Image 1 (cartoon, rainbow, N blue to C red):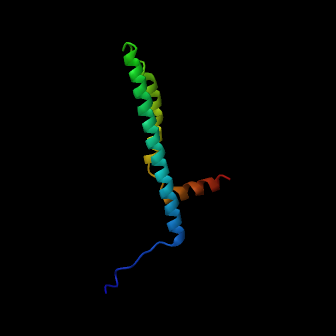
Image 2: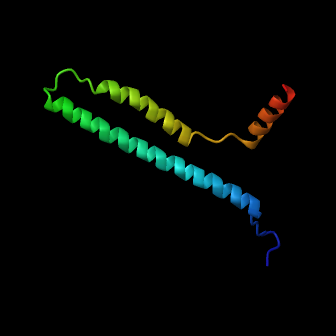
Length: 99
């Protein structure tokens, strides 16, 4: 057997930490999907109202734009990378020095 191959199982506390992070990530993605679904449903309804009432000035653009900003920031929160451990430690050190 090759001795260079090492079975690297994570300690239980690391598994639990990773599990919590995975559950949090999945919850955030689920919430974002709900937010996008609500955005599409409500704005589709607004466009239908606009169309049925004469299709003049496209007023649904205002709520679409405003709410769209919120959807973009929500997506940013979900998909932005987590800070590295080095960055977290540096921030902790900086905070400790200023106390």
